[in-house]
Image (cartoon, rainbow, N blue to C red; front, top):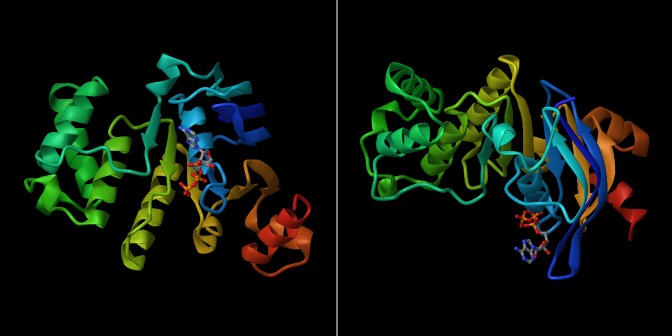
Length: 238
Ligand SMILES: Nc1ncnc2c1ncn2[C@@H]1O[C@H](COP(=O)(O)OP(=O)(O)OP(=O)(O)O)[C@@H](O)[C@H]1O
């Protein structure tokens, strides 16, 4: 088991936005968190990544209770808004993040070259990031999250604003990374992306309404699309 949430709740200013969520993510899977805007996906993944704390309940990642600094060094996190330095080039940005992750010398240089190639930005690596398109910034953020070859990779809506071709390329990349042994958690509000996950959690109004593989969720509800399955599970909480 790579990730375990037990009875996790989160309040902001006394308002509860996550209610009693328990779930498990298996090692080596691509696990999706699917829900509409405001459902609580970002709040959940931030707590898993150790950036935010649960108000109640416990979260374990790779066997340690979060938040835990040592474990955080084994997690790659890509936030929804790109945390990049616009005035620096892509290469300079990656050097900066690599130093934060403690990469040095030859290993650092090699890894930067690898991730740039992975997200297909080698030819643009010397451009200032403020000249990048939205899709290029997303890919650079993904590259930064991959620098330290994390055991767990957490991506908050990684393909928002990315054209379909590139989206496809990013998903192929995620599958490659998974095969190398990384456990991946990805949030999305897009059904066809959820469909690509091995298992997924459906979230509505901060509540977990269902967990399973896309096929299981459709079967359980006797529907042919995840969208219908989502509506079906959601109804029980309406
Ligand atoms: N720092 C905060 N302070 C107060 N309320 C917050 C804070 N962060 C999130 N919320 C609230 O928590 C709820 C869940 O937000 P969250 O960003 O987790 O949803 P989401 O599913 O990621 O949505 P989106 O897809 O739009 O990013 C929302 O009602 C939001 O207003």
